[in-house]
Length: 70
Image (tube, rainbow, N blue to C red; front, side):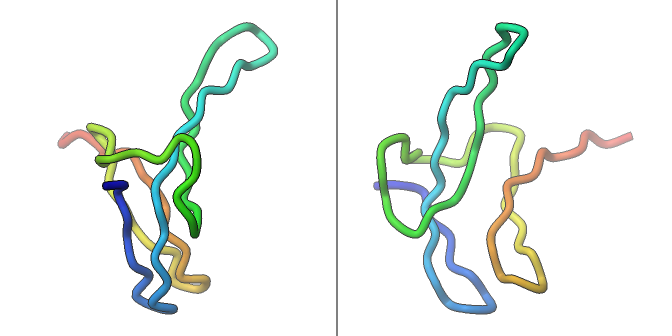
């Protein structure tokens, strides 16, 4: 079962996905994004150290790193 979140503004359900991207310098990074349908790369759980928030004007979900306590 893919990790999903429902928008409070629109009520639409979004599925969390991840993909690997190679940068020009050769470094590989993981990109996280939400999509309306489950596709290749759908994740079953939220990655460790991240939390979901929502853009207040558009209602789109965002993945943010959790800041460590100071």
